[in-house]
Every structure is written in C-alpha cells, then in structure tokens.
Length: 157
Image (cartoon, rainbow, N blue to C red):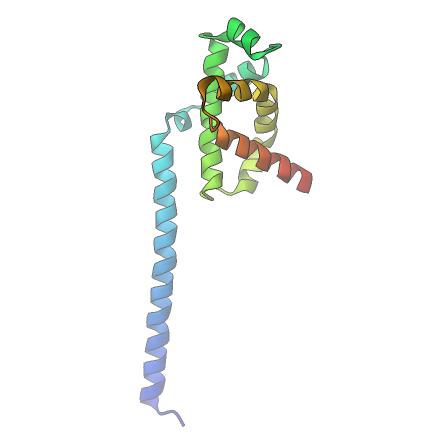
C-alpha cells in the first residue's frame, strides 16, 4: 500500500515533469516564431502591400514573349521585369517559409494557389533561361518548390 508521502512525491514529480514538457514545447514554439519573424524582417519583399502584389501579378501575367531573348528585348529594365523580380522574390520568401514549415502549406494553398500557379507557369521558361544565363541553377528555387506544392495539393483536392 502506498502511504500519503509516496503519493505526494508522485504527484509533485508528475507536476514537475509536466512543467518541463510544457516548457520544452513552448521553447520550440517561440523559436519557430523568432525564425518566422527573422525571415520576414530580412526580406523587403514581405513589406509589399496588396496593391503592389496585385500590380506585379497583373504585369507578370500580361508578359508576352516568344523566347528569353525576346523577353529581354521587350522588358529588360522595364516595369514588367521589375514586377517579375518583385513577385519572384515575394513567392521565394513564401516558399522558404513553407519549406521550413513556418507556415502551413494548406493556408498558402487556400490563399495563393491560383496566383502562384498561373504566374509561375507563365514565366517558367524565362526562369529556366535566367538560371542558365546567370549560372545560378537555384534562382527562384523556392518559388518553384511553392509552385510544385500547389500543383500537388490541387491534385489532392
């Protein structure tokens, strides 16, 4: 039989263990919040307002080209190219947040799926040629990852 002192020690031990577990979980949560805040503060692209994002989407989706060379001749140094850069970096940041599991992919899907898919599909050939031209195979890698995740989720839904 257990005496009252043994039961008291057990109850206190369970309480302390519960507190330690809660503290560990809370510290992990706080670390994720700090990571998200750091990424957002480091990226100027997350400071775009809704109108700027919408304007960039409109310009990127209205780009007409037959080749990368044609794109450069028509849009290099013009607002459409700046919009492509802005939108690409915005979605690049969003892709990083999703990749690091700092934002839920379903939330991104519900808000951004159509825009991510249509804009990436529109300029995918440009990105592929930009990667070759710049010698950077990882250019807009996380935007592409974001795109692939949206396509995957579309097939699941």
